[in-house]
Image 1: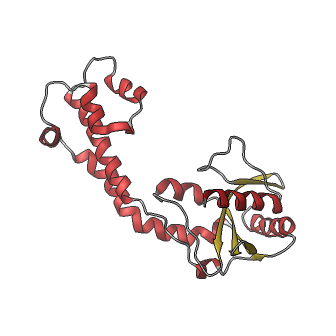
Image 2: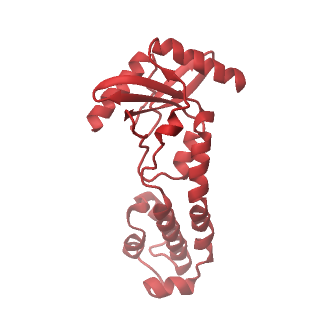
Image 3: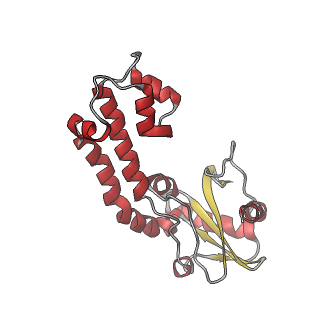
Amino acid sequence: MAAQDDARENRLIDIFNLERPTNHTRHGVDAVLRIDGHELAFELKSTTTGKGLTTVRDFGPDHIEKWRTRHWIISIHNGSDLTLCRYGSPDAMSSWIEDRWQYIRPDFELARIAPERITLADMFEVIGEKPAYSLADAQKLHKKQYTKAQYTAALNGDPHFTPERMLTIFRERLRYVIRRGSTLNNPHVSPEYLASWPAITSNYAEELRKLVRAWLASNP
């Protein structure tokens, strides 16, 4: 499926005359449109006739932040045949994004607030009380969520972690666990939601630029 998705994505870049961004990665910007002095970031997705759009695993605040300003091209297929494409501006996706954010926002607020309420006594209850904690203790707790450089920085030149420094890592662990459990697993965009987006069935590059220029005119 990944190979098929890549092929469909490459086809969209070709027929809409888009560009790959510099240093392209799978989780970065899919494509760029340079138009009238603007450089617009695009998400390129594909789906099949009658089905909604799958998005991403672990959908959370990072996706919300970047998707608020993205433009979208959705290719709709009947088997291997491209039926049509739909263009969505940032405005077109805004209500869907906001609805998902309101659904998960309380959990992420909890992740922001709760760790700071944790005390040394709470930490001692979970990992045991010591006058100092080793690097191995810290890595056992927070695992690979810190890089080697981050663990070194947290030591601040000392051979061991003081309880107070270990508490900082303990709070970070709680924050990570709450945030990790608060993401959505592949939330879908329904066919009904996409149906209102302008359809493009021919002259793909030209029609896209007409739609984008209309959006730019209303969003100077």
